[in-house]
Amino acid sequence: MDTTIESRTDDHALPHEADVDTIIISDLHLGSAMSRSTVLTDMLRKITYRRLILNGDVFDDLNFKRLSRDDWEFLSFIRASSNERLAHELVWVIGNHDGGAPEILSHLLGIHIHEEYVWQHAGRTFLAIHGHQFDAFVSEHTRVVDIAIWAYSVWQKLDPKHRASRLVKQASRQSKRWMRRSDKVANEATAHGKSTYNADVVTCGHTHHEMDVMIDGVRYLNSGSWIDVPSTYIVITHDGSIAIHTCP
Image (cartoon, rainbow, N blue to C red; front, side, top):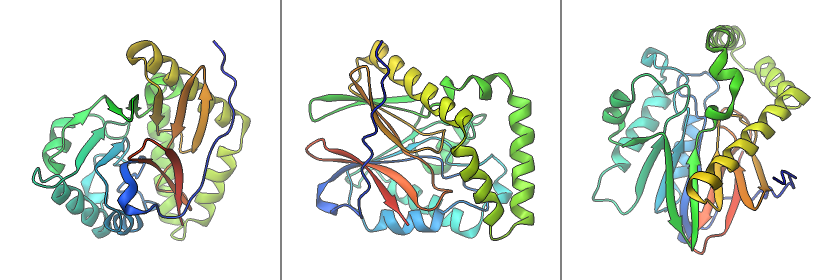
C-alpha cells in the first residue's frame, strides 16, 4: 500500500454560512482548564450547518465537577441543538476520554453515540472515527496514560495562564515520536475505512495534530483540537469541498 503523505491542509477564515453542510470538531476536553468551549460556542452560533459531528473527546474525563460555567453553556447549546424539529443533525463519535458511560452521555446531550459514523455526501463515502483505536500506546498502557493525564491536570492548576502547558504540548507535537504516532493513526484509520466501508474520506481526532493528506487513494483529515490556539475544525460544503479551518 502506498502510504506517501502529501500535505494538503488549507486554513481559511470563517466559512460562508450558506455553504456549510457538515462541521467536524474533536478534542474539546471539557473540564480541562485549557478547553476553549466559549470560543467554540460563539463560533457555532455564527454558522448555519446541516450536520455537526463531535468526533470524540468532548470531555476530558467524566468528573462533571470539573466542568466550568462555560463548559455547561456549551453543553446546553448542544442539548438545545439536538431538538429534532431543527434542520440539522448532531452526531457524537465516542473518544477514549468519553468512554465508560455512553448511555449517560447520550441522555445528557440527547444525541445518539457512535463508535464510528459513516455517511454519504456529494457522491462520496465518509467515515468519522476518533482514532484512539489505532494508537497502541493508549490501548496498551492505560494506567500510564491515566497518570500522565492526572499529572498534566495538576500542572494546569499550577499554571493558570497555561503558558508552560502550551509550550510542553507544542514541543511534544513537534517531536519525531509524536509525528510517528500521528502518521500511524492516519495510515491505519484510512486502511480501516477503505477495507471496511470503501470510504473515500476518513476523518479522525485524537492526536491533536491537524492533517489533510492522501493515503492510498483515501483522503485523510484530522480535525486537531480545541485546547490549542488557534483551534482547528473541518468544514464540508454542500458541493463536497473539504477544508481545515482555523479559529484564533
